[in-house]
Amino acid sequence: MSATPAGRPVLVTGGSGFVAAHLVQQLLERGHRVRTTVRPTASAAKLRPLHAMRAAHPGRLDLFEADLLEDGSFDEAMKGCAVVFHVASPFLMPEKIKDGRRDMVEPALRGTRNVLAGIDRTETVERLVFTSTVGAIFGDYADVLEMDDRTLSEKYFNTTSTVENNPYHYAKTVAERAAWEAAHAQDRWDMVSVNPGLILGPSLTPASDSGSLFLLDELFKGYFFYGAPDFSFTTADVRDVAAAHIAAAERPEAHGRYIVAAPEMTSFHEMARILRAHHPRSPRLPRTALPHWPVRFLGPAFGLTQDYIRGHLGIRFRVDNRRGVEELGLTYRPVEETLVDHYRAWREQRRGRA
Image (cartoon, rainbow, N blue to C red):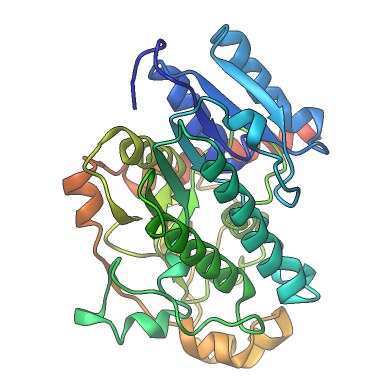
């Protein structure tokens, strides 16, 4: 993949999304010609950052309308491209999922297959960089405790999530598996998968549907002011995730799956402690950590099943991110920087909506 403006264009699916917007921005800053797809129903507010990028980089960003569920929808945008970054993916909060297969699995799988079919029809495409998740590696945290050295690594696939139990992780797993099957069935293009943890950091677009932004939104709004439950997360800065995608495309030797996450997990309580150091007057951020028993007792009232609580509460593990560091040259921002920038952007967007 050429890093010069004279190189062939690249395609980013879902350009108005949390990760994709940062990816488009960084690609432009590195001199690439970029095409990105947006949904026909995308709002003007969601598109505004992309229009600003196009104005800042004349002649190097083109927007195309495309629908993940429409056959051939990506063909026009993909013409002449050397690399496809498939970032777009349907997401719904658990309470909005009425039918896991219909609402999550089928759209994720059908959308991936439509992008793969477009790649097969586009002879210029040399590499697919596929945005997956650590959720395609494990279902519940308890699964990682069965892995070698109780450490998360790329060699595992999620085998415990189902349509009924964590349909989002299940959908991402079957979509990634379908992409690998297509990649291995031919030899014209290759594939690299980026598997990030909980993605945090400043959002370039408003009203993102990202699950990570929703989760932190609850923390910032004070849902846990009484105390932080003992849940921890594998975390990654959205800017580092975007950089990982570019490294996966630009380095010919890149191959396989790459976990993009800090080696140590971060808990809700640690997140609140970091943010309180910068915003000591915020009454919404919890000051204490909850013991386990009230979470087990009251969790179901807040939508947490006993199975989820058993599989996650109090569980921490290490993350093996060495492949990305050694092969992609990734460096990670400190989690403090990520959280402070995330909180700042969240407050600015709330003021903008007021």
